Length: 240
Image 1 (cartoon, rainbow, N blue to C red):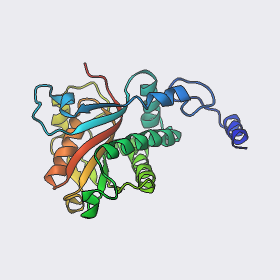
Image 2 (image 1 turned 180 degrees about the vertical axis):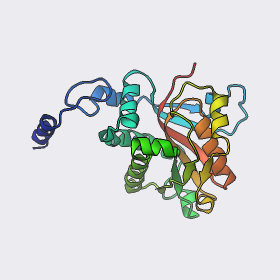
Image 3 (image 1 turned 45 degrees about the vertical axis):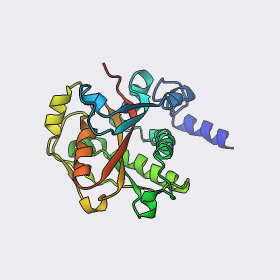
Image 4 (image 1 turned 135 degrees about the vertical axis):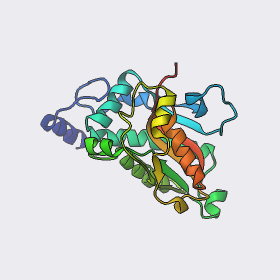
């Protein structure tokens, strides 16, 4: 029955895989597999290879931002393909579950016993991006992760507490680290600092390029008393 409904759906509303263009797929199995090519790098590797003494926040990426992965993410971000929320949410949830296991965050962890849930904090969108896209695209992924991981026994809550003032141009721009940091300086705000004080925090973003957005988010959260223990992203741009 489900196969028949799926065939009827694509007959009435034809579409193709957002990554490779294969017909009658939202994200085909081959492109889905590309979001399970996990990688890990220290955050400072993205913005300063000469500073090994920076705080050791690790960035966990589902995929590498090129070819079919790039096409799929751009379809989701800039062309309103909201059907990709489901496969992207699943990829992030699976990676997050692995990260939480690595960090030993569960209902029996010392943070949970102290009433300190792990907070999943999405990187903010500019107001211009929100109006252009009609939504903050990370929020549905963040909420899905909260539901799925809580049902799996993890003490995790979504916390969309960050915002950004003004406009900084396209999120994935070919700009150097210094110019991106300059545009972000002093513009990321936290709506309720008390709500994250003492909590371990995992940052969530779609793409990491220079690391400037994650670095700025980390600084704001830690200034408010949170502890950024990791960042999880859909994709990581290959470093030169």
